[in-house]
Structures are given as C-alpha cells and as structure tokens.
Amino acid sequence: MADFVAVIRRAVDGLTNNTPEMRAKVYDKARSAVKRQLENMSPRPPEETLRRQLDKLDGQEIDYLPAAQAAQARVEPIYITLEGWKESTVGARKWADLPAQAIKYVRQVEELIGAPVALLSTSPERDDTILVTDPFED
Image (cartoon, rainbow, N blue to C red; front, side):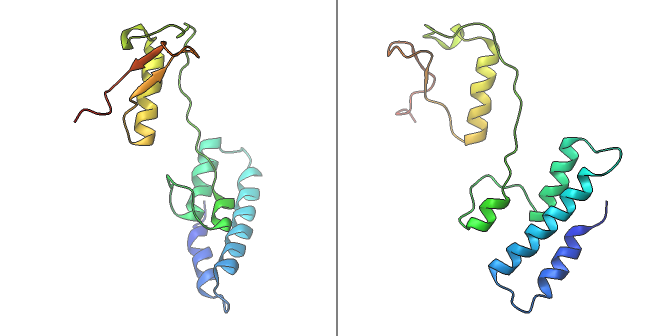
C-alpha cells in the first residue's frame, strides 16, 4: 500500500489558503479516493485491514467525539464483538448469579469507559439490582 499519508500532508502543506475547511476538503477527497482504491482491490482485503488503512488518514484512533463538525464527519466507530449469553439475568441480585459472559461484558464496559460499574440492573424491577462496587467507599 502506498504511503498516502505523506502525500496528503504535502498537499495540505502546499495549500495557499490553509484553513480548517480547506484541510477538511483535502482529507475528505483523499479519504474517498483511498476508500475507492481499497474497495476495488482484487482480491479485496479484509474489513479490518480496510479500516486500519482508512484510520491512517486521520493519524490515530481517538476515544472522544471531536468538537469540529468536519472532524466528526470523518469519525467512524470501531465495533467490538463480544460473546453473548442465553441465560436470563432477570432476578439476579448477586454478582455470582450472572452468567460468565455477562460478567465479561460488564468488565469490557468498565475497560471502555475507564471507570468501575457500581450498580447493575438485571430487570425493570427495582429490587433486581446488583451493587457491584460501593461508589461511596474509598
């Protein structure tokens, strides 16, 4: 794969009217061109490879929503797949009552948000709640 990031940087550096709007236009045009090239490759690369190549246009993965509307338009979510569970969680009131995959799911959510889950509801009933960690303890 060509080093399209360097080409785009040169194009941006060469702009006579180097404004955020003009840079966004260059990136959008480049992103579309690269996406077309990647999608038309034969054999087509795996989706994960396509995503990584397109992410290089922006230079990095981010874990926040950018403030600029043009930057928001270029953001693409990164999906993760977790194994599900068939057992019901309705009525579970202790951590040990949850299926193993449900516990893994909660741990993944904690990792993604960077904070512990304190309270977990297992049904619409108020009593079907698990106090995972006491948010008022140190």
